[in-house]
Length: 130
Image 1 (cartoon, rainbow, N blue to C red):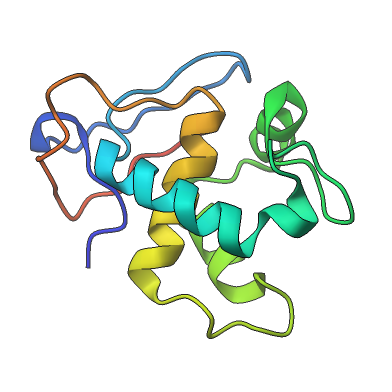
Image 2: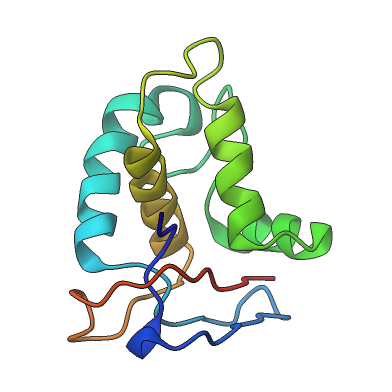
């Protein structure tokens, strides 16, 4: 199953070495919008309404991007971490597609954007975001 949509259907590993840099084409607008709704319902109570953290770690800003950049994590690893650990003690609350949507929202809030007009394209490739 596709984890994320990729720009123009090509397998383009998008490696972001600087935490402030932007990648493109990693998710659709629809995934982002569905993820926002799911995040607000399932994640915001611990991670904050604006991903600012709270009882759980911060999920936005340079701090979050540097954390994953330094770990060398790619999108698949980030997905697996979210899928296998969130929400704590309620791992079956979301299905696989919903976890992908939440991840799209988190990525989008961290300046990883989908290109305009590409929202309908989907592939089974995963881009890297380091």
